[in-house]
Length: 221
Image 1 (cartoon, rainbow, N blue to C red):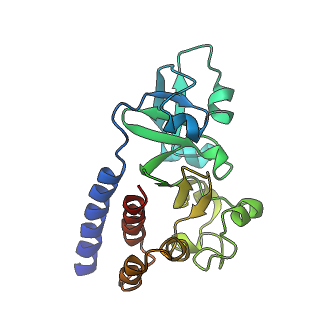
Image 2 (spheres, helix red, strand yellow):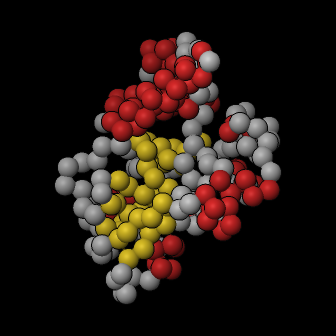
């Protein structure tokens, strides 16, 4: 019971940390963006009114893909363009990135932390080439077996609902898994913060990792 209460508190703290960290510049325009630079310049190429729909677990189990799908009534914007050509969609103070460009699966993932290093959770990639690109093959948190960094082995249709904690660099478009190994590398130039991170009781927990990613974003503004 005590452990359950502790986990509940951590989840509560993480929720509010993410709420605070997902703040975007005032005046960010809604629309479809074809690149990160377009977003940073606040100039969406597609200014249609897009609808972002949260997909159900059943839908994801049946058809795979990411958590959000994007639609529009504008007949000039084809679904194929939304699926393949968009970099992201900004709607109601939230940025959704096209996860096809991140881990190879259709539809969109929500940016939970925004800054130089964005944090989001696209569908877990099982293709070896994608895992190599993301550094998962050499990352001890993810290289033991598929899903090892997310709580152990999984099977069948459950693969479709697995999500990968991912960092996306807004300046370079580099993608990396959010892990202890990645955070230690990013903290090399901040030895005091790195020492605090290494003193954490659970350096692998998502709450801890996100906390220090937010700190890095603040340091690199």
